Amino acid sequence: MAPASTGAVHRLGPLDEIPVGEARTYAVGDAQIAVFRLRGDVLRAIDAVCPHAGGPLADGQADAEVVICPLHSHVFNLATGESSSGAPPIGCHPVRLAADGRIELTL
Image 1 (tube, helix red, strand yellow):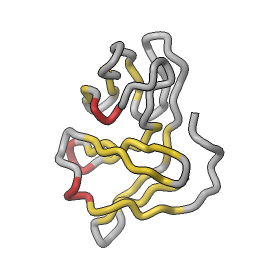
Image 2 (cartoon, one colour; image 1 turned 135 degrees about the vertical axis):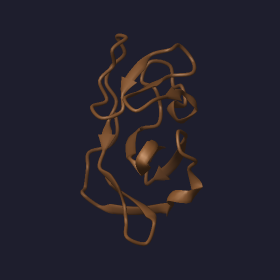
Image 3 (cartoon, rainbow, N blue to C red; image 1 turned 30 degrees about the vertical axis):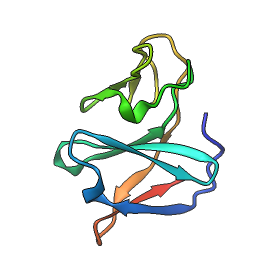
Image 4 (tube, rainbow, N blue to C red; image 1 turned 90 degrees about the vertical axis):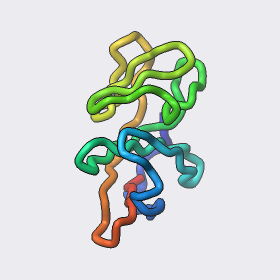
């Protein structure tokens, strides 16, 4: 699980760094956060590491609702962090696109 939220806003980088349908992992303080860019420039931010075996979730297959861990196929809901495959839940974090086109994460 991610560290407790401080409510701090972190500017991560331009949206254009993440192709539609893909994700990128960012180091934010002590946390590793995966940001997914979905169709319509919808963003989702989750803990980047699978709690089961440490798989890199940004490298998993994702659609509009879930990501599948590339190591052992655990499935996580991108909006809630809940797993439908028995793994512990992951943290989800508020993320938005700022007016200047940069990604802002609240953690």
